Image: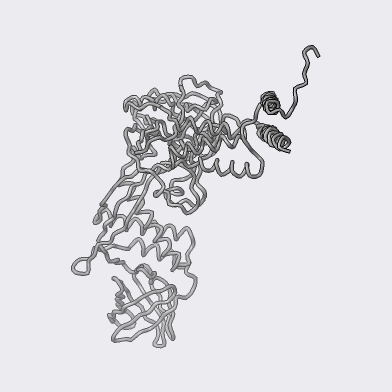
Length: 542
């Protein structure tokens, strides 16, 4: 009984191991190994980053009163048009005239407004001067006076009929700076910026992007004033849409006229303060609603080139490259190649965060993640300043600017920089060797860390469905770099695959399996013989 138990135990151990190895070998047989594009995209996904350059400031503008020659538009709407009350119809024109009919007959004259005061100068049938306070809400107007009481009027007829008069009123509007104790200062926080892609080149936090991504040639004040004009334009448009049923073209024209009036007032009386530019680097994917600023690393610009240069009186694209630095260590990095070896016809691919800047600055509406576009080097073009660029049909949209372009070895050979109109298929890369000149000036080398090594080993195991090795290496990555944005994803996927039997450990060679099994059996037999459980009945020569 004792012997059979021992044999049974060893048999279970041997054949359980053998069975496990066989099953593991079966499920661990790799599917098709990913191509170089997929391999590089997965390997460098944490090294390709989103860069946001944000300019902020505060607009200060003295309070004002709106004065009109003949008509008015206040916060509630325009007085221009035809109004009706019980027993009376009243029409105001943009030329400063009014007329109407009432139970007492026809009347007419001129008018003016200032603030919420309406002044009527009756010319017919009698010369009379009267003043009212007025307010307009939608199609309703209330006139009130201590002498004449209060009356409520309703706008009648199609508002499209007075669109031209509203436009004339806007053209005649004057903003007058308030003085005295009633004067205040209006404040508005404004922001503007740019978004693009970059890539990490050293574990201690150096990265490369385009100079135009960090606003190298942009004037901070101009950008913030543009942002203020955008806010004003939207507010004016919303106001006119709320109170005026006029055609779209006329509405846009009126808004344009009034916007110019407000901006002229700002240029003459206002100022911009607290101007500041910040740079943020984000690594990973973001889900809708996430605040990217909270998850981003602050960065500083260490060196930047010119976006444009003037050569012999002609503008050309410049050394549109910038080097940034974040205060991090142990970061994953890309591998830089030699752009001098690039040939026309070479296959390339670009990784980046395509999209418009205002879609990705801190409040994404859809999932934010790096994407891949492919193409070929269709030509080499030399700029007027002597810089050679690579023309490609790989898609490069706004957010791709500053992103890495790879060769078929997975090495970065270019920087996605500029192109024609969207969908034209004519885009250009700056050579990576140009960026290396910037790196040399800063004494920065393209280095790699133990994290890169372990992450690459983990991915190789993952592609072979060796999930035990994948998990081991990815956990080592997280120990060294807890903020790695993707390592845990592979662990979670492997845990699931192991649980469902879709993946296992590394497969063993079948010859090795049988050798191990044979040795184990021999050891058991020797053990049993020594114990006298199995008698020796072997004769020499037999």
